[in-house]
Length: 244
Image (tube, rainbow, N blue to C red; front, side, top):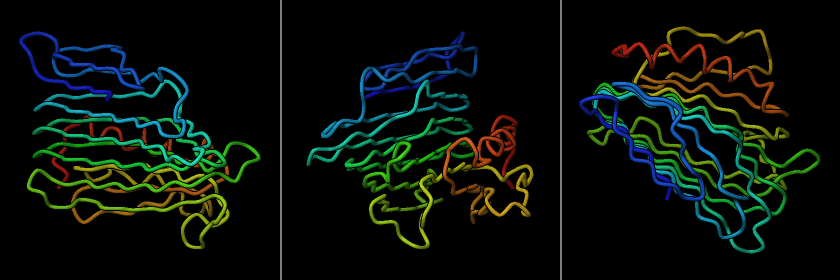
């Protein structure tokens, strides 16, 4: 299991970094915040691989995570692979994770789960880019779920998707191979950066509790417009707004 934990200390924040199939590398830190890069230790995901990433941000701390490279799920040869992420944010904690694309190649079979718990006044900004297949491929099977809850257990967002490049479903991905998402929890977006005249640009869904999903479908990850949305929403996490 890869573990990243940040907590307040007398000087710079204290970090606990434990490597797994993904290895965390400290980039910088100060009295309240840290920046960490995630680096793959080898080819992942192969059939039967189980990747687990545990992230804990202590009260009043800020953490930024940057993927150095994307993740590629290769042919599973009959044994599914797993990629599980567990995120816990303390009171007033903040996390921004700019994840790189997660590519599911032909013949891959992946189970992916993200569980998030937000403390009082915490905020999270997460990019998730799912890609079915490399260039010229249709892509394999991906069953993915995300469950986000407040500290009191109240659901903020629960989503389950079953995607298969060989059997595209109308109303899910259709003929697209990229599902690109910016997820903001604990804050309202400071502005709506979407050009609603663009028929292929991202669309925003505002959640009942403070938060929003910006999502786009497309043929390539770099052209979805979600990267610009992440930057437009980033000040909401960094500014410590109350999300009201």
